[in-house]
Length: 435
Image (cartoon, rainbow, N blue to C red; front, side, top):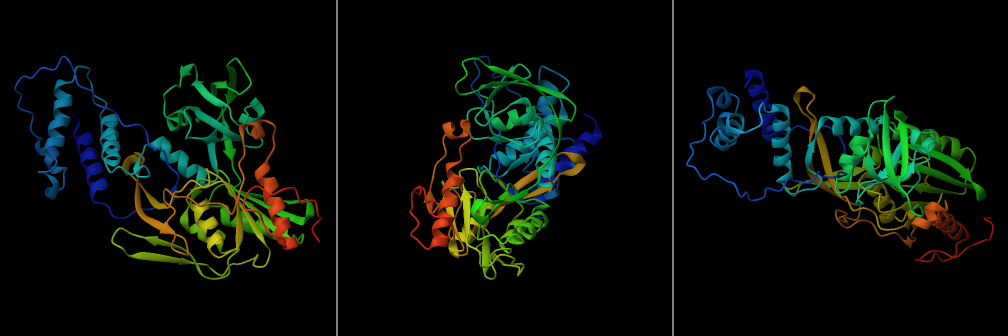
């Protein structure tokens, strides 16, 4: 094996095991399925002395780990000497070793981000990526379209919410992890991808050939609805979110709205510091969240005194896709009584991940470093936030382009402005005009 490859492997192992400095944010993640080792009927129980680690392999392993890593190097050498199909792809073998190590921790939010996954995740937080332009659900049996992005190739092609991608470029995706399917769908701008889709109400598969493009995503959009209600949609907490929110607020507040609806549905999160900056636009003072570490110590994140909208009533929309930084914002709102939450229970991701890019553009190690608590010290991880007003949305609603959750948010805000009781289930129609 080439000496440089051996040295790279040693460096990767050293970096993953010894590094304590991390950079990045945190985001909802999905693990690739682990490989299951099955018994073999044709095993050869011949006594065998495994090849020992070479001098170069030992030298590339930190001295305090050389004894521990003897079996690793033995297995590495066995594969290179004995495996039937040669040559071995050393890069794939190295990535598999890192992936297996991370999976062994048993934390669904801690995993190896292969280069394409890492590049795509960071580019989306920067507000740009290459693909078809659609928000997707990764928790179904198949990769499912939540909604095409306005003006995207996915929208132009006719993809609709609820569409399930069952094949990509003619390859059956049955049983394939949705995150892996997503990686097949994204790709360089200007290239085509063929999607086979099942759609409710259609008896036949639907085929779409879509030309990928550079997708620019505004993380914040807003408009003034009827009855002088400001509507703000925040779809991620990335690099540009705070600036985009401030610009949106400047435009909407100039129109003298009577209340604000903030839509966090299907917002998977993003950077922790961005969630604090966003919360500080609406919460004047106090703790936004606590970040608690494994040794019991904690960091406290307080409002930054950037408030623009202190007095206007707020309703926040959440659903099963609202996670991480979205839950930080919604949880702080709920604890302070600053907003009424409408929708269904949120995802429940109350842990903090940091991403450390690995050498030679080989992806990143994503590791859970802490769990966060709301201002009232509520734990959200695997629990989620329960809305104050519970409202569901069905596949039929998506198909008919109805949004009962937004309707309920509007009615809830009207009730707040009229100072009448807010029901804890879906509100009835309130047709009284806002004074």
